[in-house]
Image: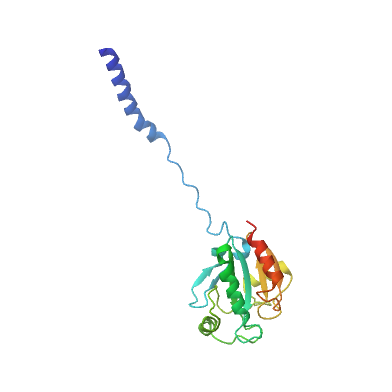
Length: 199
């Protein structure tokens, strides 16, 4: 009996003595290399723009995985009331994955105000809450990089204010829509809803 207990004690002691050595010899698990911040962000969204209200840089990658509606806007245009419909679209479908992004531009000489003036106008007149960015060019050689890419993929640049581009969840551009396409256009909404159903 004593021999059995001695053997058992020796085995336990040896086991305990070996365990730390065994663990020490096992190399610690290496952390996976940190993926680039934009690894899951489609190229079309790999751009940064200043927020309209305070000009703080905002990466469009924060909208990766969403259906994105990009619109060039202006405060003194016959289509300016579309702000209301765009806000309603954003509010109605936000929880389902839609985001409307507004890009004020003076390319058609209808947006002469400062960024702060534009922001105040949009909020006080139409209650705009969807993300908007600092004023920039949306066509020609001076177009901001997002609109250059949209033009490249669709073969069309904005012909006027409130031109629209719809981007699918995977970052592919679905289509471009003229200023005449109102935010409550039935076919337009059906296309948005179809994209929202796509994972």
